[in-house]
Length: 338
Image (cartoon, rainbow, N blue to C red; front, top):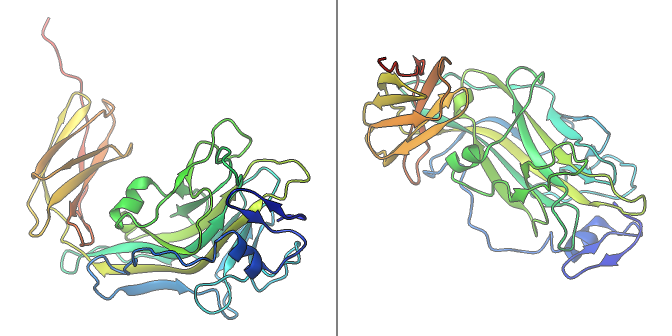
């Protein structure tokens, strides 16, 4: 946050400790923008909430990690500015986009256990949150700073970033908007992220169905470059109404056969009623193959590596169905006769 009022073609940045509501209106973060409603479930079915936090009251599900740049909006921050800008109630999380290189975060204190998948009652698991952001720079420069979402399934010992595929599987609602510039001192330089200015609150959701049976923690980070001492950075990230829900889903395809080849594996499965296409994913490496048929060959694999494969049933307006079993196969180079 800054100490002067600077005007550019499309952004006015906070200075002189203006009230945050006025400052947000000046950069159009609070402007009403027509956006498609983001359903809790793609099929408009009623979700089951496993975790929900509106950031109100005394419950503190989140803790700042790294450099102290994340706060509950109702708490005093070093910048002495009221950063309450919520979509429900009055309170929210806020991560500052300052002038020191780093990627401070706000992480869940405790994980949320996702029940194991069941063939009798197939569901998908989704993370959904409301957020608004303003990341540096502001006037046509490279997108140096940004916001990223990560998850952990081992209590926070290791973290993984949310991929484009996860946003897409949950309907493609407001996933990452760009890439942070490479070659900077931003520790996450070159990564996909929310960048620029959101022009108001939006709702994002991503799929975590493949993490069923595990305990999941979430983390939000503002990744930023170092700036001149007089550069105040930007508004940062406002987050509200975070939830983890389950929704009724298509049944998971039953894998019937796998056939290893040279740097490839052919996978077959039984058809799922209502599915318009299928996606096969290799574990590890995350190679994918998408088809409307019930067989597909996953390529560009490594010979000699043990792979498992998971098949998803896809249909517009429906939650994806995930195969319960993950079949094992080892690609092997073909033997050419002498």
